[in-house]
Length: 447
Image (tube, rainbow, N blue to C red):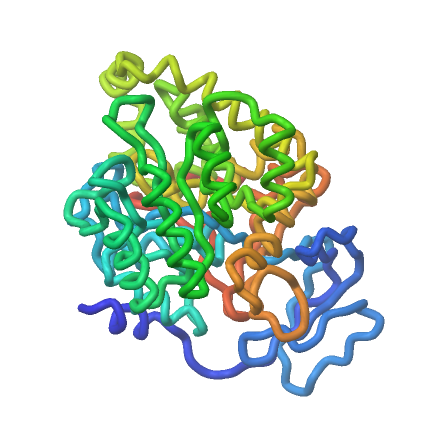
């Protein structure tokens, strides 16, 4: 079944007016939480939001009373990769419409109602992307299509034609992705701890950035090294998809980024943290285990896998890499650099949905407030992506909502206390209603 057919059959039909009332609102703008609020959803979009005392319930509306609950916009993950894995085995052959649909449902179950894919997707991503203005049970998709790679170096995916060797080829690659419908353009500038011969040189990266801007698209760069971040900032890149991780950022780079409006679109702290473990620390966390199969859990917990990870030559480098990432993200936030939230989920052992909540927790540990982390994952991401109808709880926006039992402003880990998830005003199954690959009784009670 093709991508369009798979997605079309999953979209509910019919318009309904819904009233959610008597909750505390965290609207995604960074404003203080507001108690005793209500909203009206008409045909999938928010038509009114305000104090419950001013609510006028439309005739025939379905009412849901949410006293004691917290309502916020659905999360947006600005850095994911779709369809690369089956379990934790990774191969491009798994990138089918059916597998992508399954992963988008899992993101939605975790309250991640929109994702942005960053450069490893085949062309089948575009029909899926083009259906984001719909009512459905899966996360909305923004995409760069295929990212630009220099001579098949870091970031290249076997089976994808994304390698360029000259500025002319780079410009042509950008134009082809834009013609297919890419929302922005991705480029990789890295050498994987020096294991590759060379990184993308400035004559290629500057051609990518210039051509993307001519085509009216922003650019986002995978970087690792301070020097590349400084050079790309000089060239006019719009955002970074990871933190600088080889050394501390200094006032010179921060000043240059701020002057040119360069975003830290994603710090991917959860990505860096995951590499520091031989055995991941959340294998007994029901919030995680409900989203994976018993076979995946068994493999993740195996001593053989832990030994293999620990013996890898780069394993000792990951802990300092994480420290640099967290410290540099904190410095950027304090300096007034704009930032979003992204995880780099999707490749082996970087799990859709769960990592978004871990990312929020790590952002707060790095030094921002829970409100700042939530704002990054909602309105800030939407702003950078140019997604004008998501990211805040406001009239005219899609009713993509996360309903929580506990206050995430008091403790960011309360983002996991998911009571309900709405996409375009329709409830979708939450992770607490999920029990992947086993009978429901085997998942145990929700904590």
